Amino acid sequence: MRSLSLLDTTLREGEQFIKTFFTLEQRLTIARLLDALGVPFIEVPSPVSSPETRDSIQAICALDLRSHIVAHVRCVEADVEAALETSVYGLNLFFGTSSELRTYSHGKQIEQIKASAVPLIRRIREAGRYVRFSAEDAFRSDLVDLLTIFDAVVEAGVERIGLPDTVGIATPRQVEQMVRLISDRYPGVGIEFHGHNDTGCAIANTIAAFEGGADCLDVTIMGIGERNGIASLSGMIAQLYIHYPELLIGYDLTQLVSLDHYVAESLDIGIPYNMPITAPSAFTHRAGVHTKAVLHNPNAYEILNPGDFGLARHVDIGSRFTGRYAVGHRVSELGLQLSSEGIQRLTSALKARAEQGSLTDTEVDLFIHTWCQEKGNLVWER
Ligand code: HCA
Ligand code: CU
Image 1 (tube, rainbow, N blue to C red):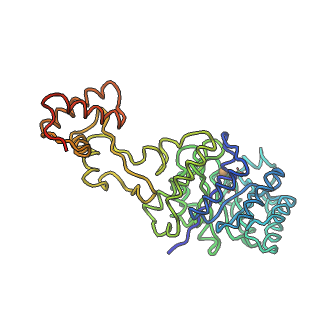
Image 2 (tube, rainbow, N blue to C red):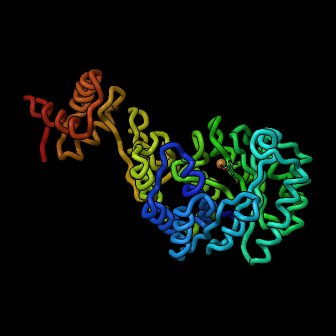
Image 3 (cartoon, protein in one colour):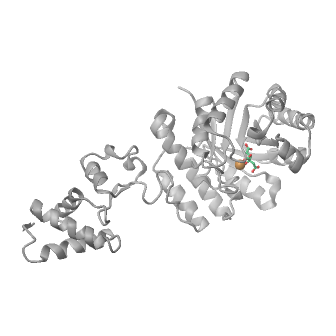
């Protein structure tokens, strides 16, 4: 079986999201919840960011979690030394390699990048810590430049190479090809992928990276990050659950909902309506054709079992698209009995009422009771 580590960077990339401001207590709770879920790596910012950040990193390390804590650090000696002074498991080094970042961000040439990274990698390895080197903006970088740098950092002893799609420009096919090329060239070295969501491909690109040979995939809770973020933890869990369930052995999937809720509340936002697994309506069925089939067998329209995540399925019958089968089902759940003609008439009445706006479950039940009490409608009441 192939090994795969999810790396959650909510406490680093996620803190770069415009709505994020986590207190120390919130950072600690998020780290604990990620650990309880079973995420192998938790990324934190560079300790040089601020004294408060440094203290938070130490407090997270002091939790003594099973998850490895890794700091995201520039290839700058002082930054590396500051990170080595903390108790982090390892350092995630990064350096912009595209001509865009070399020109407008740090102004360094490829040779200078190599010259900065190599001694720092050696230093980190000598200190006995884990080290990864990431080529920021890899998917707009020249391939020869990338290979020149990777040859050097692999030689210096990096345990993983990071291939971030920093601007979210890549397609799944490009990601798979690039990851395959790098993993074929450096057998024995891990590959990490980090996919931004600028064109909505983050989850697809991240699973493509795994299929190309990556062994570490970056996510954040609800996908929060710079701009519109990166691949979401729930999205990747959903992908793995369906396509590679053996890789989720050891995860406590019931923690996912608490995590998304906790972060959504901390940010004062709702969980996005389209979030895999944890969206409020992720397991709600509405149209008559769907509700009938799902009531017969949930597999008809569900690929994820809500029970595995501590969630429940919901059949919505208060819409203009409601169907007779689901309405009849609700009638019997309420302990009432109607003839099939009665169900048909009740459904038509409910549909007509829903044309003025959808009804909540409570409103539907009230509507059914009232309709049934009308003379002649009810066949039998338990
Ligand atoms: C950043 C950029 C980064 C780094 C990813 C990595 C990106 O915000 O510093 O280190 O692999 O998207 O390139 O998040
Ligand atoms: Cu990023």
